[in-house]
Image (cartoon, rainbow, N blue to C red):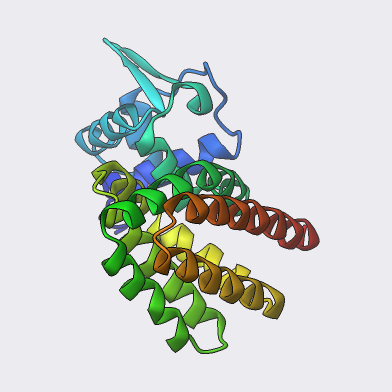
Length: 227
């Protein structure tokens, strides 16, 4: 006997079908009864999956009618982004997240240095312990982003970062596999630490923005080479 699919499994499959274009925006899904038969599970399981998909911006549930597929880029929310990172085309998403990072990271680094310079110096000083390996750089960079976001005292920055930990670490491992990227990042950490020692939060903001722009362009080069 086949094991009944869980609501999480149903949710994952439906997200993949939406992102792959099997289900188009504006299309009606099958009824709960038909979906239950298709997935070899109960209607209660289907209903649970559909309710989560509505919460995360993928669907609109209608009273006594099949759910409608949303245009998730226009009608989605933070839950949609998290689902895309887990189930969608992560390489495509990473490029856009790195572009968004150009706006976000300079702001929280500036605030972190302004509010807690000594602690920011201590965190940044750890870059000297990085070994010349992709994993070491990826781990340090993730820790650096989280700690500086925490020091900014705006909890939304940290919540956003936590939502994308898996995709961030995947991206970082790929990015830091290139020796030139590791060298460039090490130079960036050194300059940022110097600005921190000087207490120059504005200079740090400029350095971070330039580094984020450069890493985005370098990532695009890596991605374009792979397709």
